[in-house]
Amino acid sequence: MTTRAPIRVERDGTLTVITLDRPDVLNAFDETLTSALSAAIGDTGSDSSVRAVVITGAGRAFSAGQDLRDRAMQIDAGAELHLGDELRRRYHPLIAAIREMRKPVVAAVNGVVAGAGLGIAVACDVRVASSSASFRAAWTRVGLVPDAGSAYFLPRIVGFGRATDMILTGEAVSADEALRIGLVTRVWPDAQFADAWRTYARALAEGATEAFALSKEGLNAAWDRDFASFLELESSLQDRAGRTRDYAEGVRAFTSKTAAKFEGR
Ligand code: T3D
Image 1: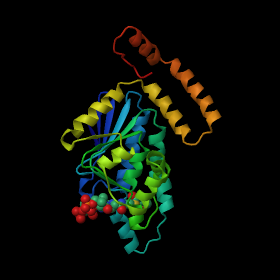
Image 2: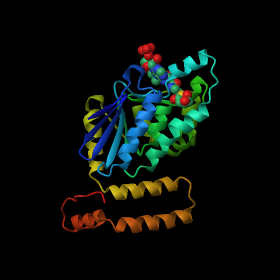
Image 3: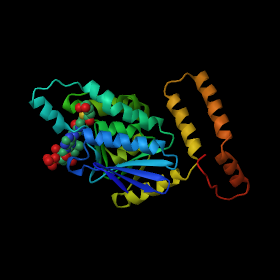
Image 4: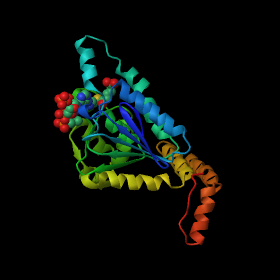
């Protein structure tokens, strides 16, 4: 386990677990937390021995988004705010790194998630939740627009109408409702949550990592490619997947009726 306050980074075999660790403020993102998370995402992205990543939160929150106490101090001091620059500098590289990471990134949403915390969760490949988790597109309640890529990803995940409702009302969406609308794909009872997401993520960390990377490449492109060029991309991705050792292993395991042992390449 390495600690780069305010996060904890734990290696569990081929899985890395990143825990946002400012529980007193519901893991709100100040400068130190966004830069520590960016560094941890960068490290895990470039470490080929890491084959899956989990982001979760300490205490009763995943993250309550941008640290508003920092902004309150700036507003009180009469500072001119340049939030667009903040997004370009701190949040956008983080979101892009999660999307571009060539391994699965799971958001294990352990409690409340709001604002830019929700942005990070919806940029992850998969979201799983504890039964007491809740989801808030909090931005308009404080007079802001959705950011950290949320208005890009959220409608694509839950549909335009539901995303608009979440954004305009800022109302909490329960874990059960999040499951119903596809915002999360698994919900486990609070008491079993930590064990359940770890089992789920370990299975991903032992999977066909290159096939996951290529699948992500296809899924990222599917957001906005036209159909013909998407099919061409699909062919080249499958070309590459078909030449991996894991594909040979997968076929061998299938024909010999044994469990595949993927190496991740
Ligand atoms: O500025 C830029 O760079 C632009 C980017 C903006 C991105 C954004 O994320 S904007 C949206 C920011 N987030 C929010 O608006 C959510 C604010 N928080 C809440 O609405 C509520 O805290 C929750 C609904 C998330 C949870 O409510 P509840 O009742 O369970 O907890 P609480 O009592 O409100 O919070 C507990 C503590 O955490 C409390 O501190 P205290 O009073 O015990 O000392 C509270 O102040 C603190 N906290 C919660 N959220 C934040 C926070 N402190 C700083 N920043 C926060 N975002």
